[in-house]
Image (cartoon, rainbow, N blue to C red; front, side, top):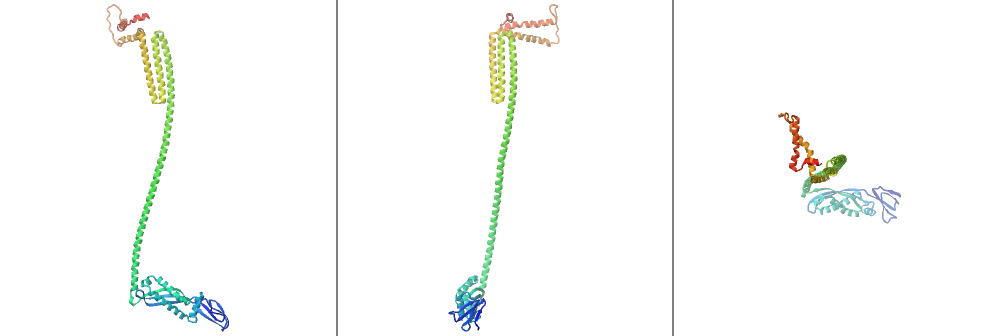
Length: 429
């Protein structure tokens, strides 16, 4: 062997020993300078080895015989110098098949030990737990050899002759359990679905009721607002109508006041005319009988004053109110009654003081009416037959003398009834 550099691939490691080294030089996947004759170079494989770990007829903790097949991936650890050194001490110079055998025997022993400490149900139902225990226990031993367990997987579990149908029974039980769980799950799913449907229906009805409630509330608010608006509108409308009626009433009142003013003016003019008539009659009566004329004047003045007061009171009552009108009418009636009473009193006084003169005056005023009443039957007579003895008047002169004769007897009748001699009183005047 010549001296120089020696190289190796990433799946192997160089082990250089000899001069200059107290312990071997380990070079995983790299190169090293080697002196020939005084140094030795060896190679160790770092490839991953696949092992099928068979454990036939192993009795579990319950005494049930089963067979287990596991698959393990192992390799010599090249990254850890101590483990690589241990692997060199154990396997350097040996073929890879021998290394695999040693690792396989170790794994198989640990697998059997784990199988004996577990039940069939645990191995069958929890394969992950079984694989983990085998991996952990085997790794602790193989590490001391410089071998790393990359992975371990439980491949197969089989019944032996003494336990035929055991795993099948477990499978059937598991199947029944799964079916039971499936039925339970389906029932629970149906129950949950029905519950959810009921909840959804309840939520839908609640939402619907809430929506209806909100709609009713909105309708109520709308109706309340509309009622409030209607009340406001009706109020404004009523106020407008009342204002219109009030203005119309004020206008009518002004018109009435104007009319009353016109009536007052007319009544004033009438009163003025009556005053003139009174004055005229006063002058007329002054020429005949002064005191009766003054009494008549007083009567007319009182009547005019009462009439004027009544007109004024009526006008004030029409403009102010019905109450005032009643009071005015009452006052007018009272004034009229007072005026009439005073007139009657004055007339009575006049009658007391000028009894004969008044009676004469009244009689003189009444005589034409008496003559008319006496002549009235004659005016209604269609035919009169008169017989004359040849003495005295005849025809119309006779009728006139008859009427005058009847009238001439009136003073005598008055004298017999009242004691007043009209003829004497006239002559005295």
